[in-house]
Length: 209
Image: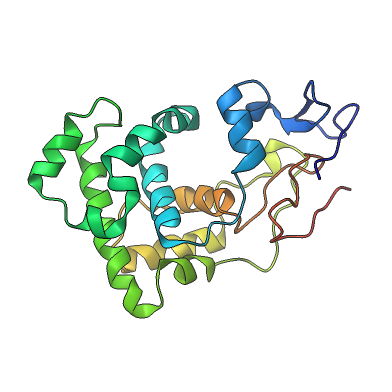
């Protein structure tokens, strides 16, 4: 159950009207707050879900995550709900369709990388699948940040994951993108200490001190 607080115990946390402590980035925008409270950092252990997040991390580069969240329904519609088998079968006609879709980020390199990555997802099934592959890079410990500056933007594990995915043919999977992926799907817990979401994934024991 979420823990109510009178005021944040740590810096970079904001106590909301509901008495819950959140980081500043998730305390004002309604969409970001809902994403933070219900989705970010929760375990994702299905192939389509991880493929979607790898794809959206690629499209996010240079943009705010709010922009991606607002466009996510359009992305899902445009990319057949990120079904790897459907995306892998896309033709040049589909590339042109996507480039004319104003609801998504129209970047030809990233669109073609998403199609390429879908093919790589399918090939990975012969080696146990994308889910086990990505989760095998879960570290032995997770950060315990009190402020934003305590949170790394990459790690030895995200570098290793990036290199391993590139070796499997994936594109736009740099170490920073992969660290963001690891945060988003629960492989690491970078919720600030004192946040009401710290430890909520069940993957890591909650730390509050």
